[in-house]
Amino acid sequence: MKIVFKYTKLGKLKFISHLDNLRVLQRALRRTGIMAKYSEGFNPHPKLCIAYPLSLGVESIGEIAEVEVIEDISISEFIARMNQCLPQGMEITDAGVYLGSQSIPSMVCSQVYRFTISHNDQESVDATINSLNGLLDNDYIIIREKKKKSKIVKKEMNLTSFILNIDLLCSKMLDVDVQIVIHVSDSGSLKVDEVRDFLYNSLNGVKSIEIKRIALNFIDKVI
Image 1 (tube, rainbow, N blue to C red):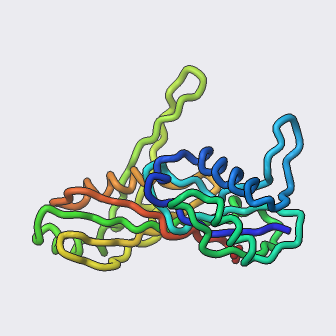
Image 2 (cartoon, rainbow, N blue to C red):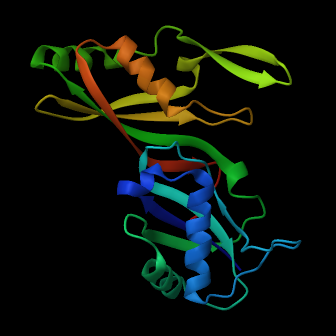
C-alpha cells in the first residue's frame, strides 16, 4: 500500500538539506515500527520519496512525500504514529492511500509560494501593490551556469515565462504578502532565489523578502 502524506518543514528544519530531510522521515518511519517496503541492494532503506526538493533556508507548510508500507494500517494511525516520532517543526497534516501508477515526483506541475515583501516606507508599499499586475508583462532573462567536464556552459532562461501568476494576498503595515505560482516542467523549474532577485530588481524600497512554500500542484489528484 502506498501512502502519500503532506507535512510541514518549519523553524530550524528549513536549514536541513533535501537529503537530510529524507533521512529524518526514514528515521521517524523506522521508530514508529510501521512495516515499510525496503529497497534492495547493499544499503536497503525504506521506499520513501519526497515529491519535489525545497530550497535550503525556505520554510514550507505543503511538502508532499510518498511511502510504501506492507502492513494494513489506517491513515489516522499512520499520521499519529509518525507525528510522535518527527522532530519539532515537522508535522504530517494530511495523508491518503495513493492508487495511481505514476511516481509522485513525475506528477508535480507547479509550486505555490508566499513571498512576504517588507518595505522601507508606505510609499514603497503602495508602489508594489500598484505594479504587481504588470510584473510579468516583460521578459526577464537570467543566465544559469553549469559545469560540464572542464567547461562552463551558460544557458539563458526567461524567468517570467515560468511564473504562472502573481496574486496579492494581503497588506499589513509595511509588509505585502503575494502568492506566486511557479511552473515545473521536465527540464526543471525556477529557483526561489532567482524569483527573490527578480522581485528585488523589479520593485523599489524593498527591505527584505521572506519565502514560504504553501503547496505543490500535481497533474492529477494524489492526496
